[in-house]
Image 1 (spheres, helix red, strand yellow):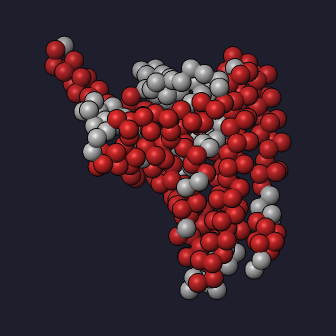
Image 2 (cartoon, rainbow, N blue to C red):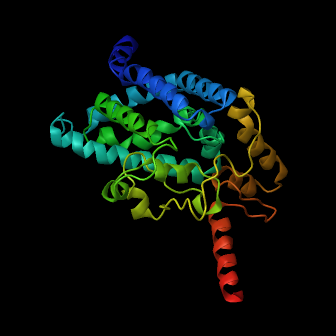
Amino acid sequence: MTLSNYLAELSQDQLLYFSLPIFFIAIIIEVKVAKEKYNRKDTSVSLLMMLFAGIIEFIPKLIAFIVFIYLHEISPLKDIIQRQWWAWLLLFFCEDLSYYFFHRLNHEIRLFWAGHVTHHSSEYLNFGTALRQGVGERIHKYFFWLWLPLLGFDPLMIFTMMGLSLFYQFWVHTELIDKLPKWFEYFFNTPSHHRVHHASNIRYLDRNHAGVLIIWDRFFGTYAEELKEIDPPVYGLTENINTFNKFKVVTHEYQNLWRDIKSADRFTDKLRYLFKAPGWSHLGDDKRAKTLRRQLSEDQEKSKIIL
């Protein structure tokens, strides 16, 4: 196939064009209903991040599509997995699992976090925040879906399911919906679950990485329930950047990462800064989410003993 053939195939992935008008209408309605949940400058940054992410993603997406075509062609299952209803159902679970690990590792590997942190930099949670996509993460994103064409799923099928997942995820970025029926909360990602994910409270850090299904978090031990009465979610970062400067929003964590790498003398420590979780330091001041959560638990146990 020629490049024009690949582009023609990729152009069939048009879900985003249909989704954007719906997203903007939802934002307008949410602003009318709860204006206090929005900040004009913050929302403008979110919309620009969506634009930046789309520009950065174009080349990686095209390359991924070409690689997916090649992997699909060599798959021994390509003649078995067509577009049957059961194949779509199977793909739904496989794609959602891919998203879970992609999202989780974006929080647990600092190099990836530097590309994802943009999405968490807003101190608001609303439909506008949903469009504040991680910019740098677009570069490594598609590696997590490479196994799917090898299972026999064709590239357009995969991209369509990825788009449907993102369409669903838009709706969980809101404070206007409290809790949904218990059965739904148990199986699916919901606004309540995702408020936890966006919160900077220690008990909520690096929890609820779900795309559509929250069952992956429950199974792999990364689930946390929203406890609004005990610990209301506080949105943003553990150390907020306090700026609406678009360049800083995109690059601040890459700058911090580079500063920390330069501060380390040993090459192994430089690598640890890249691949360990955010908060690790060669100086011994460990502020990783799991460490902070363990300290919180220990402090709570000590308080019980004192009481």
